[in-house]
Image (cartoon, rainbow, N blue to C red; front, side):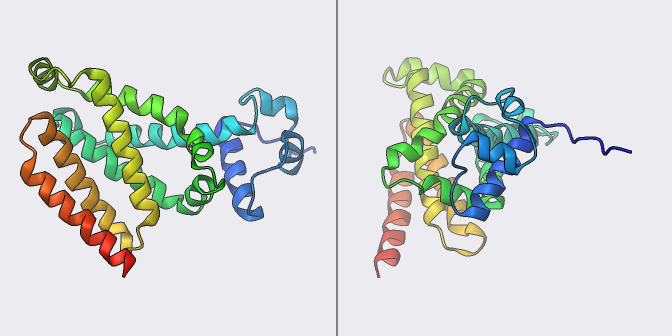
Length: 220
């Protein structure tokens, strides 16, 4: 009796791609070789992705989608204010990254040209900005009107830049269980909200001291 062929899904292709990249210490060289090695056809691959680069982008979008799925499982999540929702996102997102740290480090350090590495995050950028828009409260929007330079697009862009800085910090974090990244997240998110409230000075000093201390330790 013939064995029934396992159906190919977007998730299975992504998993196989990540495994192949890690096991061979380089990304697959072509769709043909990747598909052949993993037991499916090019036609099946193209049902889900246009090329190998689109898988790399999708991986980070899937990290975000899984994060949102997990944080919504908390029955209290909907009652959180915007700051708490963002903190919940950050801690969950970086837990997922930590579970896949080898791939993340490899993929984001693959090219000497950091711009090429960041291209993998273009889908994540779009999805994250949509998430920020969804959790932005009316209270924040009212403050935006009072402080004109805080417009909704500016909030989304600044939140994205903050995420990139946090990602860079996490990539360089050698502390047990990435404890320093947790501190970074708490301080940076607190600062961002106090900036929107136009009362940043104490958090700015506190955050600055933390970054300065980390730089001194790394350079010593």
